[in-house]
Image (tube, rainbow over all chains, first blue to last red; front, side, top):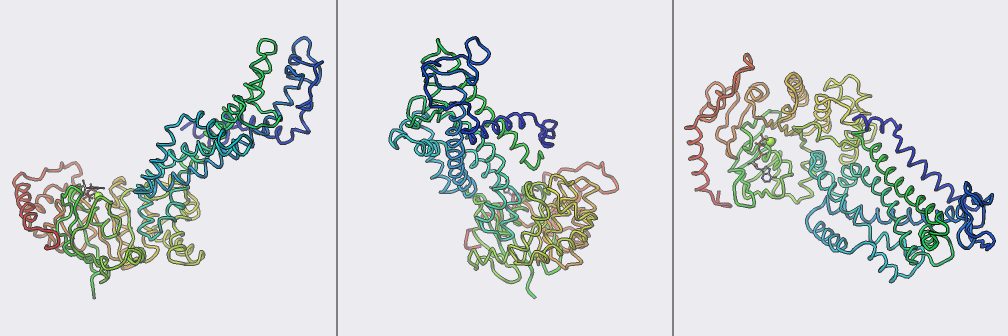
Length: 282
Length: 292
Ligand SMILES: Nc1ncnc2c1ncn2[C@@H]1O[C@H](COP(=O)(O)OP(=O)(O)OP(=O)(O)O)[C@@H](O)[C@H]1O
Ligand SMILES: [Mg+2]
């Protein structure tokens, strides 16, 4: 109750910390051309493997150092955030819409719609997700839209399973029965009585899924299956950093920290939002 | 004048063939409170759900008719049946917490039905709701209308549900143990309110309870239910003056008197239960679905 009431008053530190980091990263990504200190693609062999600013040999203007081609790491991270956020929002929203809609229908209507949808989910979940993603991108071809599509196609089941279970328990509630007695149609009851009660979970899952999408995109670029252009992505920077770990650890460490912070923030932000949305905890 | 609710030889079975309702017949006249009394599991809620068209999927009606103001529910197509039930009936449920949607404000929940189902204007619905909140003696309607259910006490929630039930002027209300979930002091107030509104609006009520004390206070007629079978049916006064069935007498003996709240419930006598078992077995032996 204490935790809930703190969250309720909007003082929850995790909401602020997670939200703050996400906002910072998002703004940096949006305004990347204005903010980035260097051109993220500019190579300069004179500047290769510069260390971050607090170490000997650092150059002003290259805060987090440079990679083995002399490209500024901070600028590459900022520009890489663009793709990370585009993928996060587009893929998670698509997965959410598809999965939540099917979950709502399966859970509330039950019967044969539920049997069909649940069977599809079972089959879907039998595939290991990362392999599934690699397979899909191999089929769909590389590129931003196929990465987004692949994540949505794989991950809608997360939404479907959770929302189905919640809609099922909602369907047994007395207020749903009262609505039926009053003469509401099934669709109306689903949208008016059931949906508002599963919404907090949808929001939490959506935020979590954005974090997952960021990871999946990073994994795909790590194995060189994501965006085929030269645009930096967090995953491709990590892949490059791994090769020069002994000469320039920062090229691996900073993108990893960025990635982990972002993914953690998405999941924490979702949980905190859920606590705020929940009328009983509010 | 036809009865407000007329149930004739209603039988229902579970998927395993077990009967949950055994040729139940009962009638509620317009403006009358008719009590349905029986111990837990007797099938009281089942009867209410059957009338309101919300039986669980596993329960199947195998014979009998239900008429609301002379209209046979079984002869209507599902849509017409829903419309009829929606327009003429309402439910006052047992648990006032789960009967309200936790994520919608009281005001929206109450007006919604009048506006969307009955097609009233928002203003008319709002006025109507306020009038009803006044009738159930809610003194601060503004706050209540803006509240979420969990922000109100159990008694307040039940008042809201009573107001909501009467708002659309139904002909028949099914009240399913409307005071069981409340504490004793609140129970009496809520009971008085229901009786008051029932008189003012002239609404017929099928009042489900397991408490004969409540029956004596609120109803004009009683049906005593045991294992899905009506074992006795009488005017309330007559029933209390001269209970005919041994089970009714046992129930009365088991009901603690109000003067002595600590009196313990006496269990129903073995011989009475044995008699009931014989009666039920006899009813089931003669019974064939469709020929009852
Ligand atoms: N969903 C269901 N599916 C199958 N059987 C059920 C279901 N709900 C109740 N029953 C059974 O039907 C019978 C009647 O139950 P009902 O709920 O009508 O009793 P009741 O008289 O309302 O009891 P209580 O006083 O406890 O509310 C019981 O034997 C019960 O086990
Ligand atoms: Mg009951």
